[in-house]
Length: 356
Image (cartoon, rainbow, N blue to C red):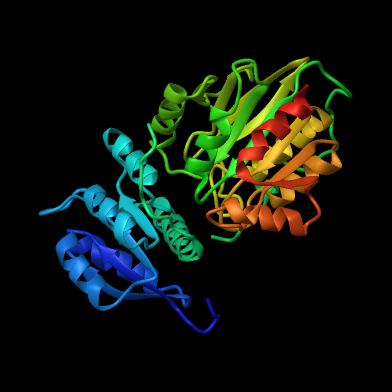
C-alpha cells in the first residue's frame, strides 16, 4: 500500500459507544481512516457491496446475525482482513478462538473505561493490529480445522553476558509469533513428537485468551500444551504458552529450566514480549536453545533473536510465502539474526534435527 493512502476501516458493532470509541482511536492514527460503521452484519454487507474496505473490525455478539457467521460468509465469498473486536471475557474465549480458525487476522480488546494507562495501551495495540491486518493475505475459507514509548527488553530484563552451561543434555525451544501465529503454532506444534524438547512460546494475545488457546492446542497435539504459570519447569513433551498480559522469562537452576511469569511494562509495544523471552533464553540457555520466529507484524523478537544467535543458539525464521504478515521474521533476517529461513511446514523438522 502506498504511503500516501490511508487504510480504510469498516467498524461493525452493535454498541454505539464502541463504534464511537473505535472511530476516535482509529482516526487518531494518520495512517488510518474510518470509511464507515455498521450496527449489524446486514448493514455491513450492504456497505461492503458498494465500497470495499481494507480492514473490518467485527464484534461477535450482534443482532440479526452473529459475528462468527458473518465472518464465515466473508471468508468463503470475498476474503477481507477481519479483526475481531471482543471484550474477551473468559467464557467467550472459545468463540474468539473459533473466529481465528475461520480466518480472522487478529483479536483486539474493546477499550474499557478506567485507567488512562489501559486506554493508551489499548489505543496503540488497536492501531497496530489494524495496520497489520491491512498487510495480511486472508485466504478463502474452504474447510475449518479441528479444532506508550516503545521500550526494549531492558525494561524487564537487563542485558547481561550469558551464564548458560556450555552444554546440557536437554535443549530448550523458544518460539515467538504474532499476527497469524495462532494457525502457524497449530501447524508447528502438531508436528512435535511426544518426546520433543521442552518449548516456551510467546504468542501476542490478550489476557484470558491464552488459557483457552493452550487448551485447544493440547487437545489436538501429541505433546502437552498449557498456559505457563510462574515456576513451571520446562519439560520434554510440553509446551508452555506465555499468559496474555504477562511477560514470560526462561530461567535456569542447575540443569533445570523453568519460567518466571511476571508483570512489567510493554516491550516492543507488547506484553508478553518475544524480545523478553528471547533475551532470557540467550542468557540462561545460550547454545542450548533453538529459536524460531514466526508470522507477525512489527519487530518484537528481532533484537532478542540476534542476542540468541550471538549466544550460540540456532535460529530459524518463517519465510515470507507462508507468513500471514512477514514483519517479525523479516526484521530478524535484516538484523542478521537468522541461520535458516524456512516455510512453516519445515520448521518443526529442522528444530528437531537441532535437538538430536
